[in-house]
Image (cartoon, rainbow, N blue to C red):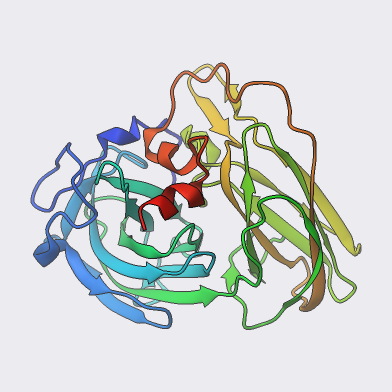
Amino acid sequence: MKKEIVLLALSAMALGCSSDSTSPSSANPDPAACNKGSISVGDVKSGAITASSCLRYDYAYSTDSTPYDNYSFRAEKGKGYMFLLENANDTLHWDALLEMATINPTTGEEQLLAISDDEGGHGFSRMYFIAPSTGTYYIRAGAYDNGEFSSYKLTLKSCDSPIPQITDTLAASTQTLSASDCVLAEPDFYNDSSNVKLFSMQLGPNETKTVTVTSSDFQPGFQIYGPAWGVPCYYGYEGCGGGDAYADNGSSVSYTITADGDEECSSETCEFYNFPGQYTIAVGASDHGTGSFTIAVTEGDVMASVVAPTARSKNPTLNFLRKKPLRASEYFNRAH
């Protein structure tokens, strides 16, 4: 269950097995105790979160320590993946939590890439990930709060990514949405679950792009997610953002997004969103339909303003994914 809090500096990430640490070391601080092995596409891992599970301080969701199991997986650049963490008894509610991490090739420290909480129905977590580079990543399967124990199932599926990352424009490309594609639970363009096709799109500082999806087979809809898919903007997390578009009895929908580093502040919190980086486009149907569709991306003029000129602080965890002049993929590729 999400709580509306502002994130502490993510450089203060804490990992530990027997106690709460304040110094990040790696995604596997104690392989014998925390690491449950590797997971591959098609696997369904069974485990249990118990009082003896490893703990980490959960800066992103609450001030409590959270229990977790850690799995490694090998991802290929440009490929899409879906993780689903659910109670072993899928009729029961369990407040599951998924986190995706990698290792910063420059510092050797863990970097959080994405968080998923409540995106899977029944309080379960469902995370989608398009790998910015080929390499080893780490998925943490756990609970929202300490004391929320349960047996679980962790499933990894492949989500077809039929075209490479869109870095500039994309002429209308014909694709197919089928019942075998990955499922997105209650996207903003539909109040039910929808099969989705995933695409990745790079947005540079102040860059504007318009995404258009057209279909004569179903009512198209799509959602654009910021670099840290799964993190809502009310956490003040700079990796959030995006937007959605859907057709009511229509055949074509468009959405325009600019990576201008927007900031909105209330009396208590500030929200940062639409920062430069790798965005994810999930194309589906707003009527349970399947069939052919086309996706096109056009590029607008680069704005003259400076990204987030009034932002009070920067999120160090995502800096290495979006820092210029290197794009995320270029940064990763430098280390491989």
